[in-house]
Image (tube, rainbow over all chains, first blue to last red; front, side, top):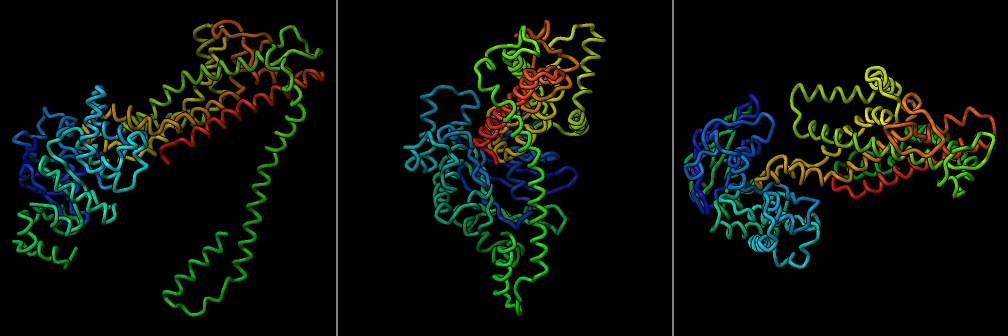
Length: 258
Length: 306
């Protein structure tokens, strides 16, 4: 199920402004890769190019290649809607659909893409909620609105919604930044379980979190103020946190700047 | 009230920084506060005077008309200004029919325009459309009526029929629907659209299944408020829809009485039965608009966005 991602010489623009420059890296299937770096260095922007969500922003465009098992996501013939079905995404703030029940939220991706079979939908809802460690908490109130859950539950609902469409890759944009430590722990445990099925890329501001959940860490930074962001270093999480190659990485990790 | 909390905030901050002697509330500021309060309240009271006055006098002078069953069930067919009796059913029915048909035409155009402006509109064309809507908002109702007259009667050579009235009302209703729907769509958080895109849902489906349901009650509220406004419009009725005393429901033939034209007709008579009917019709119109407003606000409470 899970696929490998190759990023080659990726430049990312907002209109005429070059936000990120020259990113090249590989993400192995069934692994967790963490993006760390100071605010505004482009890590979320890079993440959003991996499922073509960057171009949703007016003026957003990219140069370079993103390959998913050797398939170019930015090929002329590639439909961004198909890309997003393959590469799912969880956002910074939990965003369940306010008009829908818990069940409908989870089934939304399938329903809106035309799946009508009730039995199949029910199965997917149960499987996805179990996959997101939320089933036991909500199984008695599946028809209640999703917005009535706590923040941490809402975020797990959003994860259930994302995995219900059975993507190959799961992108997470600071999924715990709006949550308390206990909910954060629940999500981190979940990431550890999910990586047996999915390729996961997570953006985080919390370095302990990066160290706890990821196999590989990528450190992003701005060249200088007003300059585009770039990938400084990428490698095994253990190596990045104990013995990085770049001085900038070590300074950031040890808290000397950023 | 606001002054009190303000002072409270300052003093807590002062504790942290240990500023010297805060001195308490200065008398100058207290006087200014009092003066501003008096000005505000008197402005509010002055604004309320005409409203209360209108309500009370229409209630006193027209209330007894609405109390009879005839008022709601009979027309003015065969009844002269000199005679009492009959009802306003023909006018109520006319106003409701014309309002409904106007809404039926304006809502699709207005809502689709708003969707274009919020979800798709980029660049020069969208700016032009938005500018046109602004201009349309400012068009006086009599100008809209004359435009339709020039088109319908002068150019095409058709008769003045109730349908022409609704066309003029559509011109007046579209901009209010576009603007209110636009506001509601803008309130739908972008995160919901992105969540839907990230599930591999195409843009049009996202708008139909996520954005519109989220904004639905707000859009309905806007439509009802726009409808309430349009139902009281008189200029298009006077120019395009002459009054008749009998029941009528054909939009494309003959005349159709409405509440504004009933008022306009009977106000020229100095006789008491006609005067009573003027007040009665005015109160009925206020009542219909009021009910629509209430319904709009009530539905607005179910809004999923805020």
